[in-house]
Picture 1 (cartoon, helix red, strand yellow):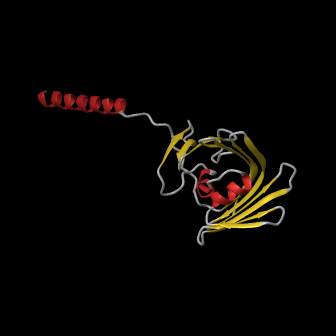
Picture 2: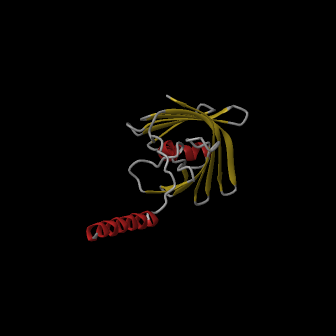
Picture 3: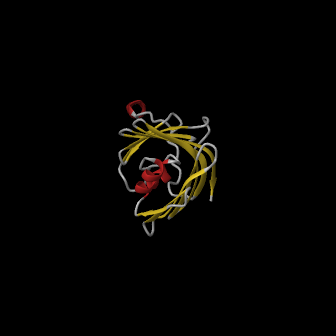
Length: 193
């Protein structure tokens, strides 16, 4: 009788320990797998840039095939305003304006500042546009209830995401802010390359 009673006490103690462990375990929201940050893509969308009291709105087509990026920005009526191309392996970036003028620089920020009036972080944006942080750089990330990226902070930018619906894995809207600069992006069409 003593052995059986000890076995019951041990079983009761184990059950109590398991229940206590379950009660103490933090409840975590499901974490969605982050999209691949450097996968090739082609995106058509709308873009608005606001810096202080100045603003620009237009459409864009972006082809990202690492290490190369090609970005065409057009007016809301479809007239090409600027074509920006770059190759990260050679650190050579070129801006072609609608009037035929060409400029060359060693980074995206300088050319996008000249073309759009704001330095866009294209290298980071290639990851951010799919809801992922730029690789090998400090960041903080807040997931939504479905485990997708809701807010990402990296490189001095805060990116707030919106999705088409509860099932969408890739963001449809991004709002990037840094100091007095706000960039809004709406993805209209997204294709893998």
